[in-house]
Length: 176
Image (tube, rainbow, N blue to C red):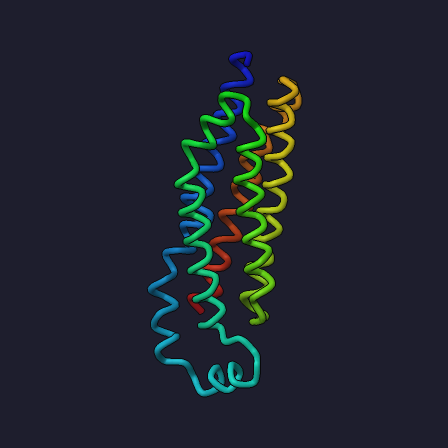
């Protein structure tokens, strides 16, 4: 693989690792914030949960747990992603990103609390956009299309920022 493709592909894998540490991992830090409200649910939250509606604490607990799992999966796969992208094995790299996207979609379907659903929906959209961009990058690596790869790589910052901002919105929602 030409050096420019290798460098850009490695940057894409590094960006994914960064997202794992900041986008998903940041939400994992809300664990302490969601534990206290669970223990001291208001009567309104308890009634809402009994009526089939998901309380803020329950929804945040689910999201926090699942996002920690996403982060762990991405962190565990970061060297595999880097190796796959550097060697041109784009199918393996794409499979990892797609698996996380599928899990995010599954979690979104489990959230019925309106506030958490909106915040997580923004994360789901940001991940979907990232997944599309990652597909563009892996396709460009496979085709050795340096122009497409460089164009997509320039969009990684915006995509990473959107994921981090969506993760922050989840934190804010769950802290409230």
